[in-house]
Image (cartoon, rainbow, N blue to C red; front, side, top):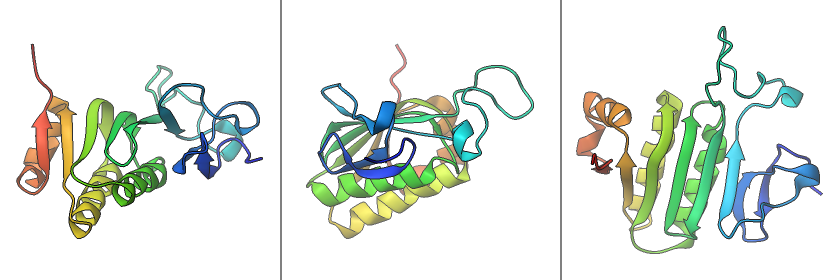
Length: 164
C-alpha cells in the first residue's frame, strides 16, 4: 500500500502517474483517472486552501484528469513549483503512451508560475522528440497573456478559451 501523498504509478491500476489521495491510498472511483497534487500539512506544506499571509481560499492543489489515456488531459488548480513534478510525470506518461496530438485542456487552471510554464515547455519538447504535438486548449486569458509576453505563443500550439 502506498502512503497518501506519495507519487505512484499504480493509480486506478492504469499506469498513470499521480499523487495517491484518499484513505490508505485508495484509487478514485470515477471513470476518468484523477491525479491531485499539492502541499499537505503532514508533509511540511501549508494547510490546503491557504496562501502565505492570507486567510482566504486560494486552492493550492493541482488536479489533473486523464480524459483519454495517451491523448488528452485536463489540468485545473495551480501549476507551480510544488506541483511541477506530478504534472511533469503525468504529461511525460501521456506523451510516451500514445500517438498524434496531446490535448492539454487548461480551462480550469487558476495560475501557473515559471516552474509550471517550464513543465509545459519541457512537455512540448518531449512531444516533438516523440513525433507528436502538444496542443494547449481552453487557455485562460491570464495565462495567454503570459504566453504572449514570453513569446511562447509562437513556439507552443495554443487555442485560447472561447469567450461566449
